[in-house]
Length: 143
Image (cartoon, rainbow, N blue to C red; front, side, top):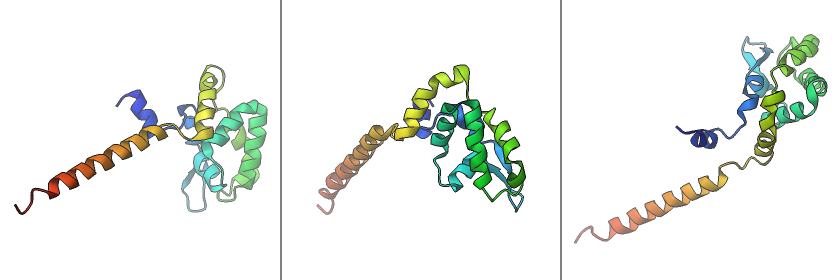
């Protein structure tokens, strides 16, 4: 698989993966809950939120993430420990050289349309081939 194919299959920016797949703690059933799951359960787009946290800077991102984690009730330990968890998690956000690709990441996350044109052309090609098979296959039967 080439790098371009990987972007079509996963259009989300890889700069945020360490952060989004990190654990925020265990829920009441003992299952590990990730940042991605936490943000999604709060009704937020995880990649867009990660990009906004980076844009806020380390301190602003930590404060915003702490506020979000305080709202999340599925992980009991976050009620008292959300500040420490937010501090630790914001260390996983990209900075310096890693954030050079942030503009691309934010624009990809913002419009969510990477690969949309290719997908439409692929669907049209499949429909065209199916049409050709169905119309060509029907004329020779029974003669």
